[in-house]
Image 1 (tube, rainbow, N blue to C red):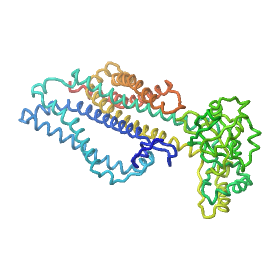
Image 2: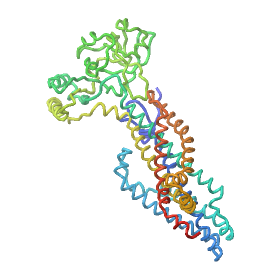
Image 3: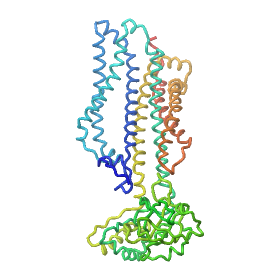
Amino acid sequence: MDLRLQPFKDIHLKSNMKFELQPNGNISYVYLFVTIALLVLLVAIVNYTNLAAARHTQRFKEVGVRKIFGASRKQLIVQFMIESFAVLFMALALAILVIEICRPLVVTIIGQEYLSISLLQTSVLLSTLGITILIGVLTGFIPALALSAFKPIKLFKVNISSSARGITLRKALVVFQFTISIVLTICTAITYQQVSYLQDAKLGYNLDHTIVLNIGYKEIHSQYEVLKSQLLRHTSVLGATAVSQLPTDIQTGENIDISKSETFGVNCVSVDPDFFKVMNIKVKQGEQLISSIRGNGTLNHFVSNESALASIGGKEDDVLSKSISIRQGNQHPGRVMGVVSDFHFQSLHHNIGPLVLEFNPGDYEYLLVKVKPENLSETIDIISSEWKKFAGNLPFEYMFLDQEYNNLYKSERRSADLFIVFSIIALLISLMGLFGLSSFTAERRTKEIALRKVLGANTNNILLLVSRNFLFLLTVSFAIAVPIGYYFMNTWLTNFAFKTSIGPSLFILAGVANFILALLTLSYHSIKVSHTNSVDALKYE
């Protein structure tokens, strides 16, 4: 036995022991989404820098005039910095407002309440201020430094906006932000496919319409058989069975002795004899022996699953003659009464291991009540009234077994929701950047487009002219994003013993979705320019 100390605050995110009070969080997910948040922020910075650089090229003459009239480089840098920080601090104020407005949505997604006062903590304020200043330097100081370095004569004579270096940089930034967007879209699609796979997986038993009652209290434990028989008198109740642990998450591990020299570890649970019938678990061997077991006097009777049978080393035909004992039980050997098919008694993160079921009424903690799906509220009222007859002042509390199963994958569903949020934000930011750059491109090429229209170009030709370079960049982004998305999601799926397959359709879907939205964004300016009067565009020439 290994005894260690653990900080109490670390239990939720950094512990994954047996018999936790509820399914734990995972610190890895925290690191993952902090990283994704920083990437989304970086996409926004890249986007803003890209647009700022494009717009700054239209201010060459302004900067040149200011320098001719005596403006120093320092004054120009200060001007650009003030403009940049004005935008950033307005964005910061808007972000705080959005956080408060979206509080209900955020609480729903992350599953935790947060206090506004937490935003005023010193560490949060310093981090926010530091990030804001860093963004201000990246988006204000660096472009201003480059722009103010030119001599006035060059600012009037050279068309720097069309230089190879400037164009290459903007293309690289577009590829970067759409790569992030497509990777997040791929992650969203695969995560949701895995969550759907987990929820729809065949478990080897039927947990639908099963109500769970806690009979671990001493006031009700001694009367559970009477309560069970009373419930079965109602036509809306299809069956009832008592168990020591919920079949969705059996955690107890024990050693069983086959002989003095043969011992191996198994999971162990106590059930009553009706368990297999109520939960629709297939009995492969010993069905008559199991049906002969009664609720009392059932100690040292055992049923194994197929995995435990393989560990015991017997065959289905002769396993019923085997005698085993459970190390932490009364240690008296008992007969194996039957073999059942393997079923998932833990989350699908784990393989199906050896399981031994015993019949010890003293261990029962829950009563599983299988009910008809019709008139469910009336059935619950009936169960409540029967409960009050036996439980005295104990409150009537119940849960559904399928909800408890779904709780095993709460963090995965939350991750899928967060991926959607981050994907939408990253995609919107990327599309806004694409919208701005396409506007800038269309504006610079207005006269060219007008000449093409005069020479017979139609709207489709103009759309292709404006968008083809951007669509090529999206193709490059897609080619980069696919292996990155596959690597990360394939690594994530290794946490599951049972997982969905990653097919090409998900990658194609993610790429097509981004392409369509980008094309719609680009088409706005193309259609707008194509409907401009060519005479107005050319009359100054």
